[in-house]
Length: 331
Ligand code: PBG
Image (cartoon, rainbow, N blue to C red; front, top):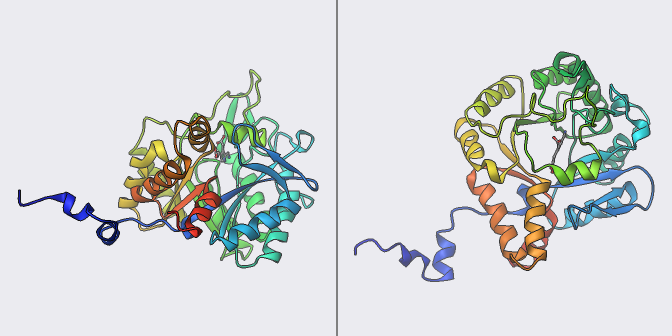
């Protein structure tokens, strides 16, 4: 045998030389679920280890992450029902606790990168990302609402806006609206290929944001989120988001869609982000807690695979755990 691939796997030193992919905490984004109030720390029952936090609890969390080398955070609001309505007006209300929290975080930690969520569902009494009327999701009527949310978030100090709603044309609409108001430096991380996935369950539990059960309200998000059967369609979304001014393209979820991550990486010069979503993290946690998987081995392997597929940026509920292991030299 002339070729023996095992020669390059003989020792840790040689394996180190030929390692193709490295994942450092700088690539990771830590999600934060924010609640209004003080001294609140509620564990999300379907996602153990992840909490819904009030702002006083978020600040030390951000500080701890920064000390571990995680510099980016994506924040989602858990909004009480009495502040939700059909048009999601609380999303850009001057009193919005989410916007105030962003300002506070950026004031305390100006060096961090804060990413927002642009979508109606945290604020919509119908539990949809767009405006619901006559049993349908209205695309063009949703855009001005997303535009108002975008301006309010840019004013609050978010560095990058994350439209997770999947309405057509929203990247261009947001870009123009932001530029008109002078927010030319506020970035957009487009949820480019966001699939109508079964893996968002714990997130919807955390925000209480599932579509409301009513015969006039679509029961799922299939008319705007992508069909899990489709790969090439992601190229259409990528082309549009790029032309409309996106700064990042995102694929979501991550693990079941590694082929889509690789496809966008090969077809775009923009940085590619992947959202390792709540249900994907919950699966791994459940198996680990049952003693069926070794968390300290399975978790880093999982994140590495997302990076290897082509994701420059990974949003994951395991960001802090990964950074802690990394700091201790266990990765
Ligand atoms: C909705 C939104 C969802 C997630 C992020 N933004 C859920 C949905 O589309 O219903 C899910 C993230 C996760 O599961 O971790 N705008």
